[in-house]
Length: 94
Image 1 (cartoon, rainbow, N blue to C red):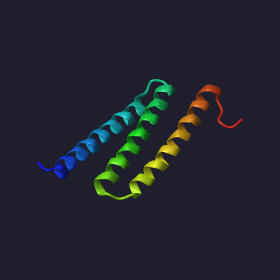
Image 2 (cartoon, rainbow, N blue to C red):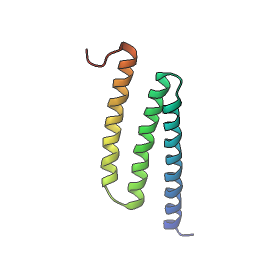
Image 3 (cartoon, helix red, strand yellow):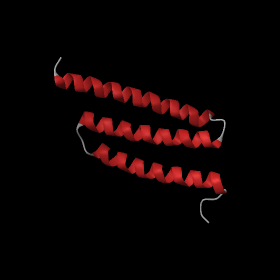
Image 4 (cartoon, rainbow, N blue to C red):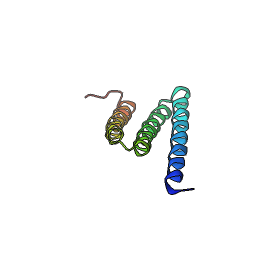
């Protein structure tokens, strides 16, 4: 088994596991008993999506996916902060 084949299989396995983790995070988002659980599940979901884009970019060798993962990371962070502020104070904009 060559190094290129090993890397290809490792990236394929990583994509499959990240997709499975994203599905499980989506299930927790839909079934979460409290709002805090849903916010944590959304946080996990955007991190999984970001990492899935990074692994896909590595596998395909294109920089587009890296840029998209940066956008997902920034938007996910802002959304998490806004949701946390909403849960604490009941409003986002004061």
